[in-house]
Amino acid sequence: MTTRDRSGLAEALEACRPLPPDGPNILKALLAVQSALGHVPPSAIPQIAQALGATEAQIAGVLSYYSDLRTQSTGRHLIRVCTGESCMANQGGRVFRAIQDHVGVAAGRTTSEGRFTLEQMSCVGNCAVSPTVMIDEDLHGRVIHSDIPSLLEHYR
Ligand code: FES
Image (cartoon, rainbow, N blue to C red; front, side, top):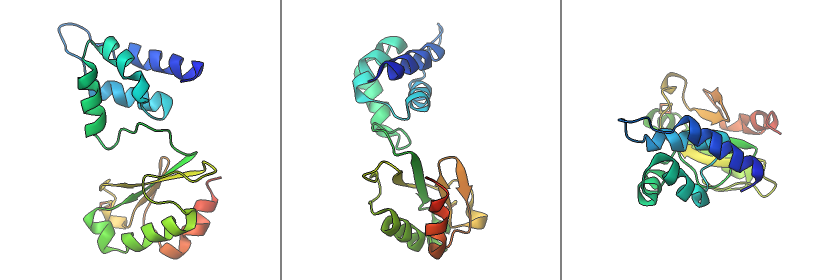
């Protein structure tokens, strides 16, 4: 971890420190760490456990259970393709394959130059305009497979 990461981790944990009589909210703390660092480094588990008054096993358990929590850093842009029912029924699979072909990596992987990380996601409630793709915080609906190159061109 860099000095900047250590500082971000300390700040995120300070904001999530449990106040008695409440117990620790491990998920909230891990989401805060991920927001600060872009991921939750496994090497930070002891420090997180100590700050929350929890065991390392409890932290590791929550970290491995929730798929929204990631233990590795992502590329500059995170592409998430919805694999929910509505999106899959509306060519979502074709959109996913078009993105895979365009960026050249499988789901869960980051391109070699670090530009994109590709992931699948569950329904985000954008079904009315499916298929849905999220790129960073941008929600794109009615995505057409042939538009993928021009869509991704906006994310350098
Ligand atoms: S199924 Fe994809 S947004 Fe709902």
